[in-house]
Image (cartoon, rainbow, N blue to C red; front, side, top):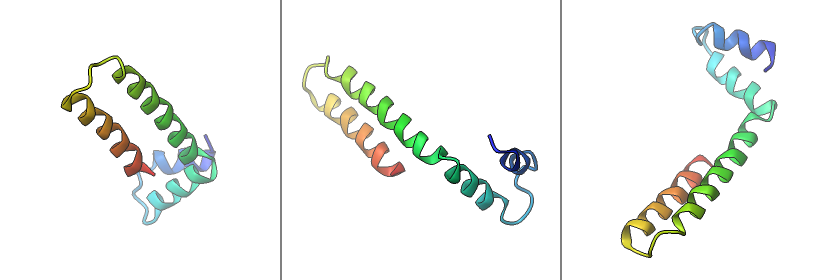
Length: 74
């Protein structure tokens, strides 16, 4: 983790613009893209687990929920 990011987080975002700076540092460090990849892997694992269930409205709702969460973060 970048020292500047640790400093901003440690200051608890009290300075104006500190949250925006933290987000910028996270993005520059590849954190946003890494989080997206992790979310996709976890979503794929969840969807694979759901395949074991019989087709029913509840299964479809869970599948849709996984996709909704992924689209919401992208």
